[in-house]
Image (cartoon, rainbow, N blue to C red; front, side, top):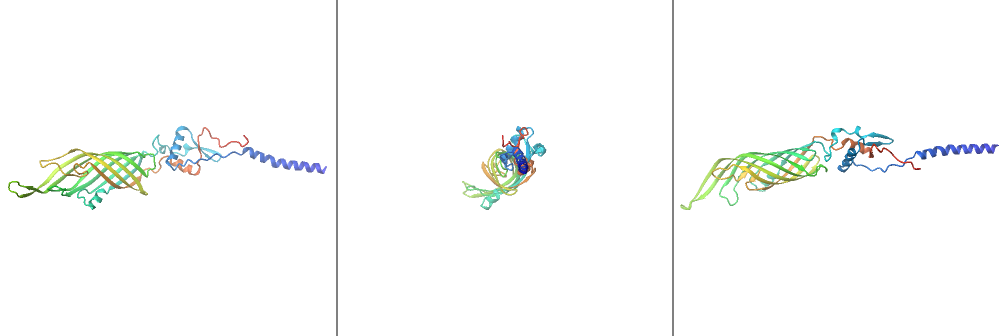
Length: 309
């Protein structure tokens, strides 16, 4: 009798031990193969954006809960197809130090140039450039000294960034700008030799007025050097559309261009970039994905499969 009672107690303890374990085994799910979206990269932003476009209500898995990504993503930060950055992305100021450097090495014309730029979607740039130029040069092989006082010039145009969906630390652009300048100049110490008398005559041509309108095509490369500081190179091809001449001929130097007839030029600039919208791409989704890297469509919210199936 005691043996039978002992067997019953042993069987009962065994069932109490096995049944909960079996229940837990049936509820155990296999973990999802977590594949980080790495939304802090451009590729990750593209993947998340495609997910949003393809699924009406994409969701995030938070343990056993499903939370709609729409609740965490502001409508004004989700961009349309092809643009990962905000409509008004940044404001940039620059200074062209090419002419100042060239003057150190003996160039006798040019001075300085400033620029302002608004970037849209990190793709299109509206550009305004303005500067001042002056000249005091005796061209090689010429019998005169050309002088032009400080003269203002300005340029307006735009450019296109071919790396618009890449990291904004790098840019490769092509642009078109139109420039205009009104200016004065003088031609001094003009030497003329008389064939009859055999004497050298020197005279001046003072206070001449002129203007110039031109267009320039530009290819540019810009890289980040430290935080908001960038540096960039521009290679330019200029062609005159119109310029003013007088009875003594055309001006030798044009502010904003350089020596007349000099079609190819360059610029080396330092830029300071001010972000106008720090939330770009899927910024809120980035914050969430840094902690929860599983993004799945709401139509397929399953979080695992039964190990026994």
